[in-house]
Amino acid sequence: MANSKKISIAVIRRLPRYYRYLADLLRMDITRISSKELSQRMGITASQIRQDLNCFGGFGQQGYGYNVEVLYKEIGKILGVVNNRFHFIIIGAGNMGQALANYENFEKRGFQLVGIFDINPQLIGKKIRNVEIMHMDQLDEFVKNNKVDIAVLTVPYKNIPEVAEKVASLGIKGLWNFSAMDLKLPYDDIIIENVHLSDSLMVLGYRLKESQKKKKKKEGTNDSGNTNNESNTNN
Image (cartoon, rainbow, N blue to C red):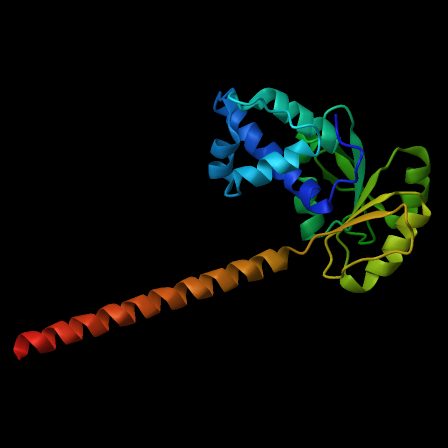
């Protein structure tokens, strides 16, 4: 059972990663694992893993570790992907919207795509995995007649504020924003997750640049050492 104290968002953000690694362990028929072994796989400390899981009751047994299947199911329950099914729509059926609509793994995680919306007349009526792209003019009626928990926003930057306000006014409480804007709305009951794919790419670029610098520096040191050795030999 989870502790009554509020769980930090940092812990919550690590849970899907635990869930993913545990799914991999199940596929490899690994039935139990220690925090140390899990830490080696995930690249975080065993202490961090124990602290995170203790926020929800621990789940492990001293001398045994964690039952992989039990822990996988419990984290799934915590994340709401086991007994719940979230219905989501995509607003913006361009390249990003279509890519997300074609991603079948969402359904395995408890997220069901129920609608796609756009304003481009060339896209209206087309289907992606049996979900028809509808015009934005149909959004009000659709939300009125269907359960929608989450709106995925893949519209141009300039349109995000207007679309987000529209979605919030219809009572949709979860927004997954893929625009370059850090979306904020003045409503306490609206939950927003901003996703910036280019941020991750820039971090990769920085790490690659630093790796290349270290390699060049190392090569320069080796070249200098070889030159000194040749000089000493000639003397």
